Length: 271
Length: 175
Image (cartoon, rainbow over all chains, first blue to last red; front, side):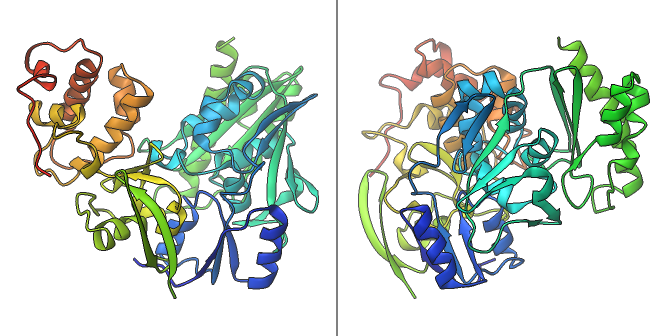
């Protein structure tokens, strides 16, 4: 379908992007790679009156290691993450996720800032940001990931706020990600990510609630010495899936438990 | 309301006035007259509309033409050079990597991009590299064969049928 009409502007700086958001008002939207937004616009589920294209803004494409953190510019694309040597060293679970985002064509356009700002519970990186206590850096403030994802497709961003980077703690322990889907390029029907962090484990759930979720109960069980299977049995209290055309809620709950155990076992065997 | 968009398509610069909501695929087909880029699923799944922007494969149904301003777009029409089919085009011909042919331009663009990134892909890497393209006729086996054969031809290891890629047997293209 043809999208609704909109005005189009290409700011050269973050400040200019912010003033354009103010100028065009509440129905204006930022666009980076557009790989989530354009399909939604084509279904007319999204009808912004103006698109502010930030792809040309300099300084948002860097990956920088900064003490215990790695800071990833908002315009860093999935394909850039796949190829980045610093990220392979400091945040290999993100690279693993990037390898499985969409397909090659989508990964050549879609950006990490776009995933974060879109706030989709199926956006793999969002669950990683949540489980690792990442920070979302904008032109106005730094958000803690745990306070950022508010509801379905709803984040703490204000209308004139521009995501400029995501800061992850360097996470080099054992890890694994299971993205359960029927076809290679699909979103996860259910996704489970695990990352060893010091002597404990972090667990994240993708597309198993209205927002990304952290596996807090599973993490507590693991910290208490539970086996992977016993900890995975706690997953039910960490998620709140709804049924859809691909899977019932009951089936997703089953998947969450099975995949949690399997992903933990995979991570511990990978050592 | 239109606005100017200047870009390079297959090495030729052009400037047009377009509505911002015009998708790159519609711009290529209807404004630039390059109908080799096909529209099939129209929901960014099938990859029939794959083109290269600055050498990287994208789905042109999921990009607005205005986003491509200042960039270099390569379509299937721009792949052959000096009247000789690109090795990937020739390999799809030789290995019969198509039946109805509708998805073929997208597959060829995606395969050309894949081989530029990874000149000697394994079978699994070929499958992963073409995950964004759907074909409803071939069952993919001959497509994989074509990509393998193009890979061999491009690395100079070609023998037998694929050897025709370089040399006098290569098929000249018109235009």
